[in-house]
Length: 112
Length: 111
Image (cartoon, rainbow over all chains, first blue to last red; front, side, top):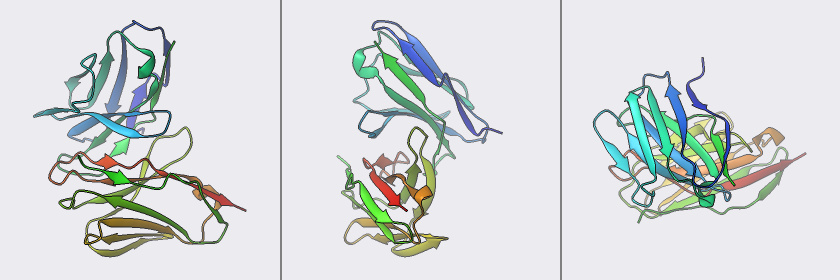
């Protein structure tokens, strides 16, 4: 009965590779998000997406792209990985227009 | 740029004491305020939200909001070691439903 799930939980890869992280929610929410949490625990929004609108944090490099096959899924694709991309990535969801967010377990990405 | 400020801590309190966590925000248009708890290695979990000035109580937790001072706090009564975690303050985007998070305050409750 997991509400928001992510795969994989851990991802270790080399610089320059392309990788994807998958996210699924079964809460019936309309809006999904991707956050990056760095080593100092700062949680920064990367993307917000519902079936009407994609909002991109302007500081996110265009190597990062969200892909949503349907409203229950929002995957994160990362091209040409860099050392600075190492972080924990959280997916979250909420009802459209609501501020309360429900987070997935996170994916720890390590770029070597 | 919207900012949410929290003291990073750690805030250390003895078991049974009241822990007081504070947060200030820059956007006067913000209407919704949230507290998330994050245990080490886990994801943030929503524990409280408040929309109106004053206090909101839920069990051992009380959220306090003062919009004039742009200040929101979280009080944890009868603190337990299991309350040891990082507490993240989040504020809505003043019309945008994307919240801005503070850096979090680490709370340590020692027996």
